[in-house]
Length: 203
Image (cartoon, rainbow, N blue to C red; front, top):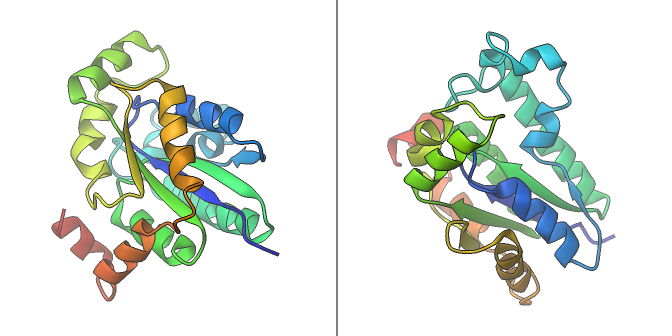
């Protein structure tokens, strides 16, 4: 059985990943399951969505607590298992921890896994935060520098310039181009032998 395709959308809070996920699901003829960070966070008991328990999940938006690390580890394992079963997956992510980058490289670099950078200028992110009622102000600024720290992608989109549908088309075009994904393979070569703290030091 061929492994399912994995598409990982990496970007800050309010960068537009959720809208792109929906647009991608509509764009592809074959089914893609949504199995990203937002889905896993919403599996938590409702009390975890308020502070102080929220701090045990994603901390101050740039460093996860114990529960958050367990959640992301489980999410990565679930994505790997779905792909192994031949199921296509789209996952929104906020790769602010070096260990998360390393785990993605270790689990997905030998699979048809595309790493997508979802970018947006900071002033646009902050305006979106103000307009949305379900985001903590300051998350995007806190994550802005860290989330794209390693900066190697198969494709990058800018949600300040393109609609979710246009972003989805760019990603779909790359996936259907007949060229194997290379970002995670390149990252594997770059960070081979590095310890997690060394990745942070290099960003």
